[in-house]
Image 1 (tube, helix red, strand yellow):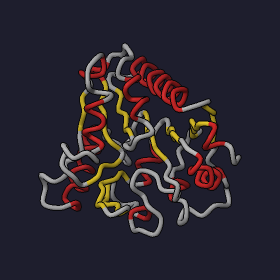
Image 2 (tube, rainbow, N blue to C red; image 1 turned 60 degrees about the vertical axis):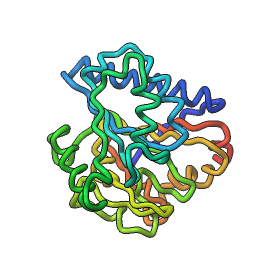
Image 3 (tube, helix red, strand yellow; image 1 turned 90 degrees about the vertical axis):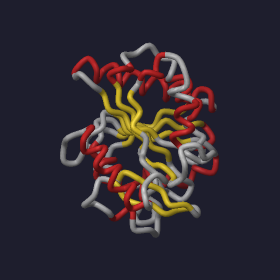
Amino acid sequence: MTNYRVVQASDSEDLARQASQTIAAQIALTLDQRDRCQIALSGGSTPSKAYALLGQEHLPWDRVDVVLGDERWVSANDDSSNARMLRRTLLAEGPASVAAFHPVPTVELENAEASAVAMADLVSRLCPANPPIFDVMLLGLGDDGHTASLFPGTEAPGVTDHWATVGRGKGLDRITLTAPVLSAARQVIFLVSGANKQEALRRLLDSTESSERTPARLVQPASDVLIIADQDATAGL
């Protein structure tokens, strides 16, 4: 059974600071043990402040591979592109600008399915294990219980024979890592913010909750899952 460790942040600034420090510490620990570190990061508005802080951490960033856990099937210059957000925060300037960023191929390919195949090939090359193992997997939690682009009521949460697939939610095709890859990470971190996430967080922590209703429950790594959440999100616990 998956063990969850909840760390409470006082507000959005504290959430960003704790997330940045936690990821930085995990990167440093990994690079003490191995030549390179592979991290998969989430998109959305919640982690952007954390990425800006993380980008200023003095680490051997030239030995870090950065991947997105999911991406909307849009141009890299689109306002909704997660790659665009990372380039403007983590990778903008400062120490982390030298990290090796591996964006998800999107509209340069013929369709979202082709992008999913390309993403699966990418993570297989970066993390040659079965399934691929990331050192850090940072995830968000939607108010409907989704994580990455594994939305309830869609096919993506049930895909276990591919490392990436097409997730369809909120009117857009998305490319997402699948549950086996999310679960294989050495350290999984959920970043949760806002009162609208109270119910989803309660369901995530409930051992009787169905993964069909709350796909975030599919993330079941061997190590404890760390949840960094603000006071608004944890108020219902």
